Structure formats: C-alpha cells, structure tokens
Image (cartoon, rainbow, N blue to C red; front, side, top):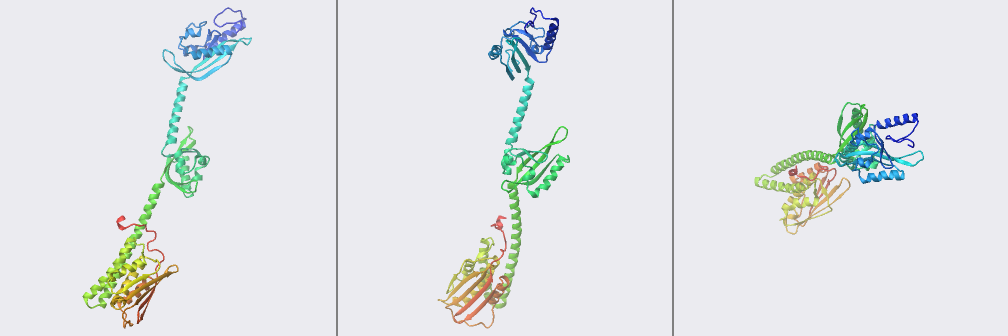
Amino acid sequence: MRGYTVGGRDSEPSRDGMVASEAALTALTQAPLGIAIFDRDMRYLAASSQYLTDQGLPPDTRFLGRVHYDLFPDIPRKWRDIHARVIREGVEFRHEADLHEPAGGGAQWIRWLAAPWRDPSGAVGGLILYTEVATVRVEAQRRIEAAEARYRAVFDQAAMGVALVAPDGTFLEVNDRFCEICRRPRANLMGLRFHDITHPDDLDADLDLADALLAGETRSFSMEKRYVDAAGEPVWVELTASLVRTPDDTPDYFVSVIADIGARKQAQAAQQRYQDQLRLMINELNHRVKNTLATVQSMAAQTLRAESDPSAAYGKFEARLMGLSEVHAVLTREKWHGADLREVAQRALTPFGQASGEVSADGPDVWLTPGAALTMALVFHELATNAVKYGALSRAGGRVEITWRADGEPARLKLRWRERGGPPVASPTRRGFGSRLIERALAGDLQGRAVMTFAPEGLDCDLEAVVSGPPDMPGIEERTLDDM
C-alpha cells in the first residue's frame, strides 16, 4: 500500500491507480464476508459492510483511522495477543469456530483468519482480519453430532441385534448384540453376506423375502430363521427386515433386527417330544391294561375251572393277583421302563416267605422289559405255589435254588429252578393249570420254552426266554402320570 492510504490520507497516485484503488475499495466494502484491514497500530484502514453488520455496528459508523481496541474495548486479551504476534512475527492464525461472548450478550460462534499484509518492500504493514459468523453452521453441526451420538448409543446398546446390510447382502455395520446372538466376532461378520451365515435350509425363503423388499412389493418382513455360528452350529433368530431407499428411490441398505429365540425353540422342541412321549405312554398304558385284564381273565377262568371248591379257588386266585401286583409295583416305580430279574424273583416269592424251606437266587444282573417282568413273575408264582404244595417248600430242610445267565444279543435268558430236600417226586398223571400257564406265557410273550424234569430227588425246571430287545417305550423320560 505504499503511496496510497485507505481512509483519505494525502497521496498522489495516477488516475488509473486511483480508479483501481477505488474499485478495490468498493469491492472490499461490498464483500459478503467480514473483512477489516488494520495498520501496525491496529487502526482501521478499511472494512466491509458485512464486517460492520457482524460486529453490530451501524453502517454509517465512522471507523476509519480509529484504533480497533477503542472501538471494541472488551476484546479479550487472547485476541489482542494474537493481533500483536501477526504484526510482529508475520504469522497467520485461524479458528474454525471460536466462541465470542461480548459484554452485552449475544454470544456467537465466529470463524476467523488473522493474516499480515505486506508493503512492496515485504515489511509487514498491518493485519487483515477475515470473519464469518458461523453460529448457524456450528449449531447445525452440533445437532448432527448429537443425533449421531444418540443413534450410535441406540445402535450399539440396543437389546436387539441390529445390522445394516447392503442390497447385495454384505454386512455394512453390526452392533455388539448382533455379534453376540450370531456367536461371531465383528471382524468375522464384516465383509460377509447374510447368505454366508444363513442355514442352507432357510436361505431360499430369506432370499425370496429380500427380493420382494427390493422390488417394492413389501415394506418389511419378519421370519424365523437359522444362522450358522463360527463353529457351524445353528442359531435360531426372529428376523425383522426393512429397506432404506435414497431420495431417488434407489435401494440403499437393509436394516435387519434380530432377536434370540433359541430358548423358545428348545422349549418348543421339548414340548413336542413331551407330547409324543405322552401319546406313546398313553398307548402303552392302554396296551398294558388290556394285557393285564386279559391275564387276570385267563387266571380267573383257569382257576375256577380247575378248582371246584369256591373258597380254595378264591385263595389261589387272590395269591396269583398278589404276585402280579408286586411286580406291577416295581414297574410303576421304574416308570414302566422294565425291572431287574433278581427283584422280580424276590417280589414274586415274597408271599411264600413263611414256607418251611429256603429259596436262594443267584445270577448276573438282567434287565427285563415290562412284558418279560410280568411273565416271569407269573412263572415264579406258579413254580413256588407248586413247591409249597407238593415240592421242596412243603417240608423243613427243603430248598429251592434259582440260577440264571443271559447270553447273546438280543439277550436270551437261561434259568434253572431246582428243588431239593422235599418229598419224593413222581411225574404227574395230568398237566395242571400252572404248567400250562408257564408254557404258554414263555412261548407267547418271550419266544421261549420250559422243560420240566420230575426227578425223584426234586423238580428241575429249565426255562429259556428272550428278555431284551427294542425297549417297549423308547425314549420315555422319567415321568409319572401325576407329572402329566
């Protein structure tokens, strides 16, 4: 600015120079920014109208030649120091959003630049101050940042799994809960498509619904589906998906929200198993009741047919029912899964505990199906009844030895009933009800047979029967009818 001073100081420029200077001054005055030019003493050389407006000064304010700090005595020390350094050191300072709080109130955010201007010799002639009131922009930016912070808090801390997914299925962003439900780290999910982690059996249905969203046929959809975790295990979720579009209606991204329904699916599966088992148990109970009634009916008919004395017939029939009920008690305790052979023998022979002789049982553990347990109980009862009446248990010193073993798969039981110490034995002249019941029960229910040897020293009865195989009630959990 050598040879020309803004503000009306004496000068002798050329006419062209004066025109150019006046044009520059006019352009400066009408600039849409706040611009002020100062000399080294911070006296005003020029300023734009916008500067005066931003500073709250009337347009006709006489400011040329006045010291900036006289016009604005409340300017903070930090800005005075900045001005001094610009003029002294020839450096620039700037701030994108500096809060200006004048004494009269009306705080504003100011974007400013303080830079030196130099004369033709290169010396710092003063300072140029560019200012712009940025309050609207700063407040808008802060609102955007606050909204972003709220969105981020909701996205990251939501109780549901949330993912932003590109139209081609690629995961763009996932929150922590989404990673937790899918049992995959975020680094594993990013870059994958939802196709890659969806269970193959559920993929087609998922793709069909996504295509309908992209085509604008629906606004959102919900479905139950399975993802596959990092270990290859299925993860049940309830998925709700919607599509965000750009202003020109182009698909931008999916918003996928998932809830973990693994516990509910497990409960539903358990309930279904329970219902299946309940139906199986009811069917089995019907079968057992019918078989038991048929057995009781046969026992009653045979007992009454073979015994003319009503009192004796009643006693025999009652004893046989008691033997049957003892084994029923064992089966009920075992939820009708079956019973141990040793306990079946002990229960069936309990009513004969006051007999004169002794009974011993020896053999490995053998598990009987419910049908086999009932049949063996009837067999033991009939053999014991005969031993008490005619055989080793009819006198003191007599004894019955029961031994067994089981071989093969399915297990085939070989059991011997051996009586010793009783009265001499002779072959019967006719077969009684007990013998017929034993033979029929073994042959019909257990695919077995009975061979009786009437030796003088005592009865030997060799039994063979199939006692294992497919369980009568597979998979039944330990529940009683009271639990139903």
